[in-house]
View 1 (cartoon, rainbow, N blue to C red):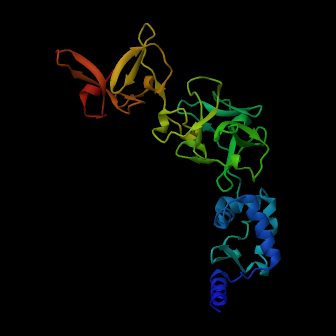
View 2 (cartoon, helix red, strand yellow):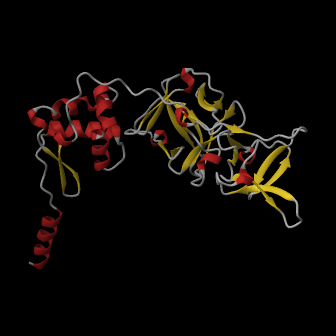
Length: 315
């Protein structure tokens, strides 16, 4: 009798009240959710479908697997609940809504630039950075709901290339036919980085035609790393180099300044503000500053910028 009672109690605890949607609506939801959030938990699918980007993706016809859910969700059958998490129920009408009429124009493609204004470009399914040429190879469409990045030139998605077994991780990048079930095509564009898991796109921002690779993300100062990629319209900094008559370049290192052979790195880059007459180091984010040394001679280093500091004014 005790065993029987325990069995009944466990069954009661584990039982969940079914949602109110018909099987047709449930099938349509499963089809759509499996497309936009394959392998993820139900709340992720609901969030993606109901997001502004996801909603427009359905309305534009970019997610055809969601057409049935959109149709049924707006019908009387759509006023029902689905079990989307442990004991949590969501009404379909909360994430399926009418498409705007007329539809708004699509968001324009994005171009991604390095800190030195080299642009990300596709060529024969490979990625490079080069000078801006304003062609379709440089234009990408990022869908923040499905996490895909599509290049205009071949209509394919960016895909991370897994490292061969027994190692693991992402070892490269290419473009490939878009597949919503392919986790290697899920990217995040954030904090001036293009990320897949804990790996980021990387390039040599000082060399034209540099191949783009993938490496573990650097979460430090992105603007002085090879992983910096931002919307080109936001990359407005113009860098200069300070060069001697013999071709040596001033380079900053731990606030010290040195004349070195060209190294093509961020330590050689400065910004010049004609209004304040100040040079600012890209690597230290400090300004060129003169000071009187202990030997009675004037020297230069970088120091915290201060527009009122006469030792930081240059002509």
